[in-house]
Image 1 (cartoon, rainbow, N blue to C red):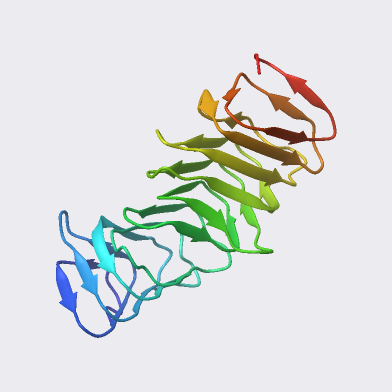
Image 2: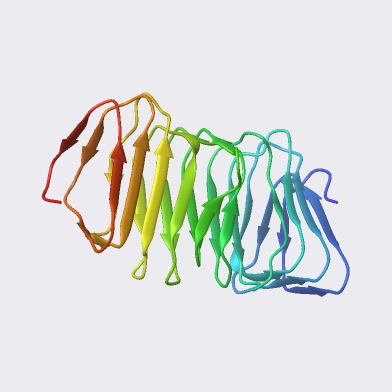
Length: 219
């Protein structure tokens, strides 16, 4: 616990739990946090948590702080535990090198970047993002975001081996949707706005629903 200063973590290997509290939290370049037990990171100031190295956190990870601004978190564990985040904060960048990523409820005033082998969201969760949202898969996998999300900025889907995309967006003012030129299956549902389809080549099925539907490129 650092009461009045920020904390920079170096490489750690712990068979138990990690609890770190400070005005802000980061880690040194090329360091690795290798923790078998739970990990809890709490900021006491109006600051951020930046853990962007190839960490090995095998159990639940909690980020906390009444005035937490932004979170950057990379986890290279093949068996990560649950991820616990505040109900609302600024921007979030999540990278899971060797596992799929399940997103729960999020309210972000900034941007969302999520990278995993595959990406899904938990049932009845809502991704409420004011800024841009970028979802990238690193495996031969899919992105499934089928709940009543509120994504107001541009939404981008990426990944060399991305197979299928499902997106439901309940925002009345959604931004552009960007995806690869070729996919297998694509499902887009806009609850309260018109849907504009760009050029895409699909090896499978297309399901599109919106208040109105137009296109800007060949399907």
